[in-house]
Image 1: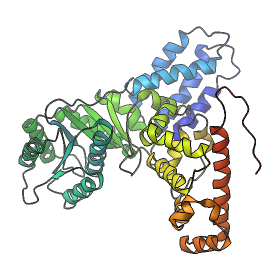
Image 2: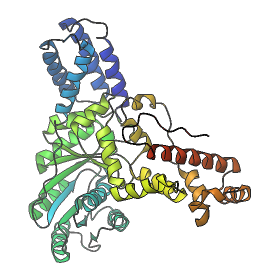
Image 3: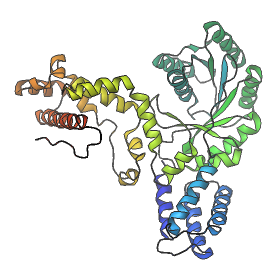
Image 4: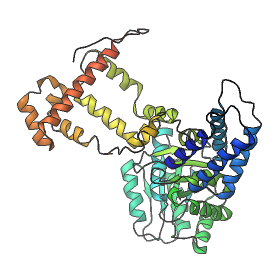
Length: 441
């Protein structure tokens, strides 16, 4: 995500390296390159020009301190303006009413149905809501079935009427059902079309007028670039939606929609889809996205994702096991599963400052843990709990059962032993100690 733009901006800032101060001449050369980088990232032309004009105005008005180099100052100015361009601060959804109602809108293929499921899971698991999904796409044959499958997967009820072809009535009935079942949130998944047409607009306008949602979200595929911005503009003129959802930001996208849409439609981006997993949904934070675009990482989001998967009680239990040298393959397997739930591995690594650029051309296999998990699952409960009993014959059996080689099994056990020693050494360090205890390999 934004890899090409990040590289181009970095090259632009290098034009100011070695310069003693910011002048109209050297800043103009830098910003010409910045504007070209934005246009290549599919940012709207007017938005790109307004952006560079603002940066130039701020840069020329700044006094460069002796402790700050011109290039560093320019990065700071561009960072602040990027954050402002994308909205400045995160804006939450409005959940008024009982039940609160969120209406989904967008073109076919934008990811509305999947996002509806992700949103329901997020509100259920992170905010303690009791959501209901309403299947109001009466045209796409698999739409209702898809929503039902997602609902079952995340444990959220789905209201549908397979024989009813009136989406307005279905939405009304879903809200009534939610009240009867004690659900405090209804997410209405509506039909999309391959292109904007009058029938679709009239239908979704009628649904909105009928159910009076507290929040209307427009879902758009970020990979469609400027087309996404144009579509958002037309939808907003008819629906006056409250916020934008960008899906597929984990794909091969240039990111122009994320940088343009806020300015063009004057509506905030509220959520971004970052992968195929149901947990791959983030609240959109403009400042953090600006950090990532400029290669600064996003430690805050990384920590938040980790906190969602690791609870305090589990951490205390694990620490006691590590101190007693009782950390076993069951614990190891649980850690792997929690890391996988945090999201795409390359995306997670790119959140660490400086790592994103280093792994740009590295292919991180999402199935990297598969062989490790297969080896552990091939162990007996006794072997997982007592790694010390893994002799040669047991390792041969595990290799055969997991479809791996004895060498791979030996390598995993060796890595596990070293990790366990390291964790025990760290756990045994006293507060304030500067020296880590040594251990023999």
